[in-house]
Image 1 (cartoon, rainbow, N blue to C red):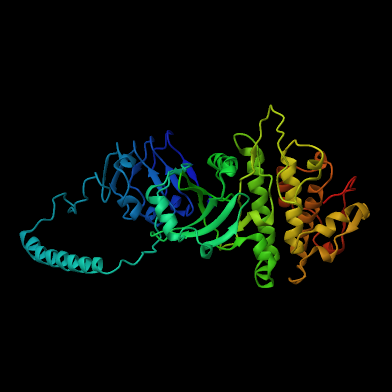
Image 2 (cartoon, one colour):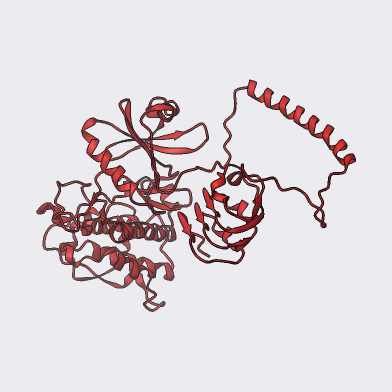
Length: 462
């Protein structure tokens, strides 16, 4: 039932002795499945051939038998994934073919059938060879099939020049402006469609002085993997140039979507609430679930990317910092004006609460439709309690219905707490997520005119 499970399901080294449940094929987003070193029997469910996201499946050291499913994954799979089983057969190179048998176990090999089949097979092979030869003479068209990316879990390609570098240079026409889709904190970003039709976002690092940012981004993204953090697939640090290879997010940045009325209307209230949840879960993962807390330090609408389904991902880890739990974590000032936590004006100590402040600003921007600069600067003069004014909602959208207004109220309330001047008074990202998911408050309340607590600013909040 975990339909959103993406990276890995590892059930190896247990004592499972029944058949493999066919319901596992419902994990449509799963990339790696490990069922090895059990006592599983029966066959591999044929429904597994519909798991198009699957990159690896290990069923070795079981008691499986019968035919493996026929799909590209199994056809290209190494024999090691299926070793030490009872009697598996099929398309995997190294496994025996599955012979057709009669109920009594004798093979069907009547001479008349063979004599009839052989001419047909030979003719088919001859025609196929002719068609293949003819296709090769033409300029080959790129096949844009759903090509499975055989990327090992948590593995980051490190190619220092060579064929991959040439492919990137060729497909971007030597990093031409025509392929440029944006700018990061340390370089320009290009759209690169490789001959396999796989599309990547390529961030080209501009100057040698940005080596530190380049290495920091690799260091951060090699240790984290989350559905709401943009994936780093590879990098190049050759003498010809340095670039990073990311998953391509079709809708671009959140800032770009909010900028024009047409794309802003596509971001209805429900989608905006989902974007808040996506960013909150990614930050919670970075702050609380990693090997060491990671502070992004530049959470802005420019660094939140959207895919075709409006899934939001945090990008641009060029100034991210991996916190030392026993250290001072002091560093130079970095980030985007308008999103910086106010305490950074008088201290160089970085904590997770810096990201919390930026998150609060981002949430207000998302629902207002523009950066809340005037609102932030006026907080010090507002009453301690105020209503949730309609100018906090993007006027390009119709006012939300009661149920959605309830959710927006909770989100804006927590966003206001996130921009508390005192970082100790800001919630953690885990606290924020609990508030988002809490089902509280009467449903008949008019949330568009409900009082909301405004923090008292002891100094300028912008």
